[in-house]
Length: 553
Image 1 (cartoon, one colour):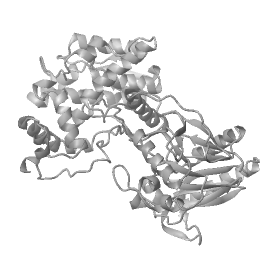
Image 2: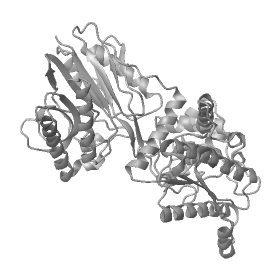
Image 3: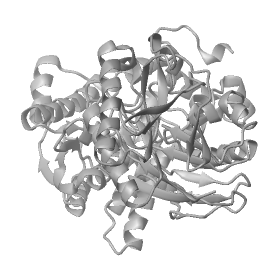
Image 4: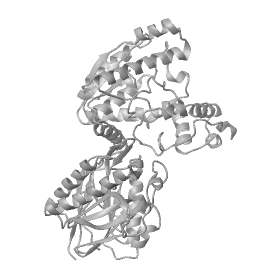
């Protein structure tokens, strides 16, 4: 049998941008052809972007996707690329055999060849957990699909089909296939790549053929796709890998003798902190560019959270597009103002000082607030200031809250919670410190100036809303609090389980009470990139109005 060159086109698509996505399909197919590829494999739902949610149910959207496939197939043929097998994901609104409209569309993979759709495959297993709602919007496929290229039999599957037992993988195990080609839209999650690889190795062994895994890359709302496409042998060997968090064309050759597979390029791996940091940068960049923003603004307090968000923004879109605003009150310390100015200078951001004291005084003259109401007033004046600058100058406002604060409600609604995007929303406070130190060390290792002032990392965190205030006045130490919150939120452990772990009862009761009371705030918080196994947002759905309290358990 002849050798077969397979190209994985690891690209960044945008939901709803059918024209832009199809232009990318054509462009990357041309690149693959120039490199001698016989087959080019794209990620899941390439034409429509992913996830499309309820757009899938619109007839107009279904028709547009169907037309786009026909247009791309004809264009490839017109450019003498008709013999290239182009495998893309799209929306299937018609039955595979009778071509009648389906009650619900399918998540479909098609092979474009010789000017038309040559082979089609509908995703069998529809995930309905975590961030996925596919069972709600798609119909399930029930047929395997195998295409032949140069005498080699290539089987198709889509993402979840290899995560579940049975279905097409079980069918292909009884077939004589040369490779299993899988289209994927697998979102980033810390530590997930190793899980994907282990799964792919088991499926490759089951079908007795190499598995070619094409994953998308880029940010889409609150999801980040990390790419990291790869090829594994049926013996578990990693034969080729693509870099993470960037578009890439990975070429791999299926050898004449299937028993001696070729090896392709292996991308250098990223250490864990680097990977998480790049996921946050990618998420912000995707949201920023795909929604047409030109600049961002955020409050620079001199603290660690706003410092990390500012540096992430500078890395994502360039410091020249970041507008930092220091908004001191009568309680703001000089060192905090100095740290904010220093940070802006280090990352090349715009910087201005806008005192909120006169605004607070104006309200206080009318309302004479005290206690928490007075503290929240200061935060809300900052929120008003940032939104006013956004409206007048067109900036995207970045919220700077971390997962710990959001979990326990330590953010002021309509105050520091304002914004269109929250880059560190899924990082707890302990992780914020870790990534800040990592980013500074990364700069040093590369001969650059550390972007975050050391004092922003080492000083006790404070909202500076009253004299001498520090966070630990009203919260347990962050390392303890984060451990409790991680067990409760990401692993669904209740009071009894937490006490069995050895956590102090007073700390547990305080933390769980704060989490329960803050759900209404979390529903109004801006979206941000999913990093952990369970992020606030579509991952976690609990009622706002509820009498249940863990102390009852």
